[in-house]
Amino acid sequence: MVKVLLQADDFGLHGSINRAVIDAARQGVLTGASLMANGPAASEAITWLRDNPSFPAGVHLNILRGRPLSDPHEIPTLVDGRGLFLNSARSLWARSVAGGLDAGQIYKEYRRQVLSMIDNDIVPTHLDGEKHTHIVLPQAATAVERLIEEFGIRKVRCVRERPLYRLFREKGVPVPCDMKQYGKLIVLEYLSGRAGKRWTGIAAPDYSFGIGISGLRMTHGTRRELLKTLFELPVQGTVEWIFHPAYDTEFDEPRNRALYGPSFLREARVDEYRFLVSEDTIRTVSEHEKAVISYRDI
Image (cartoon, rainbow, N blue to C red; front, side, top):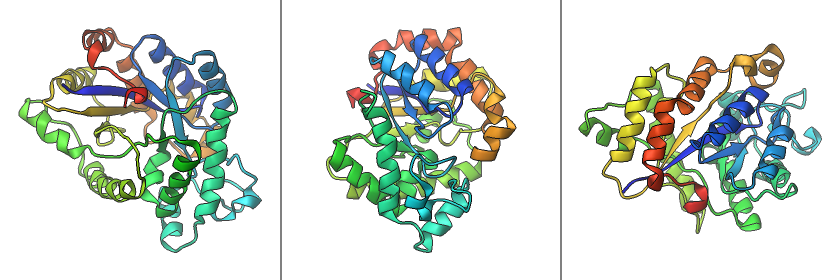
């Protein structure tokens, strides 16, 4: 029988996102979240996690967007002239390919992000990365390897999604996915396999889901069919469905956009939140309670 994790990213990025994650967690739908420790609303998220220790949370390792926790002078290969992260996956990748990223500096920033939880008595359940940079960038994968050994956090998100698509089609519920996102999945799955080979002794969900449909505007009916079908797939393993919920679009306000860039997930985040807290979703998750797990169960 398939086991399903319902996971939210970007906890701490904005108050609107925090409200959505907390609300969906209280409704019993979300099984965990990932903290963006350098987000403007991270302190609020950390306070809630400390007060709600039963809710599992990992670290959404981020060297892509916003202001680092480290002094920019300590991590010059990761920041621009303003001391901010590059806010562009393409620019970060180009710097990586050119040999302009320092794995030790990435580790230094990642370590501070992990400690932002540990120092507040929150035990991280796992590691994942903003835009999957923890697996895309070889230097970041090296830094993750050091984190695994230092902190004993041996659960890391990997990407393996396309094998599920055939199973959905066989059930008569094709997964909507444009060619750009599908091409991205091919690359991510390859790089994920490469990174996973260097991380010894880790555990991860067997499959990911939600990356290919990320940012797509879909009806609740389509999402409902995907969720119901997911629980029925003939898979002996675990599937992590990754969400990016937000209560409203305030997170894309000008000040936040200057630090984190315009969000292509703008309305899609709100759609995902409304789907998560809908009566249909709450009922479906409740009906499959025994199949719903968290990173603590991996």
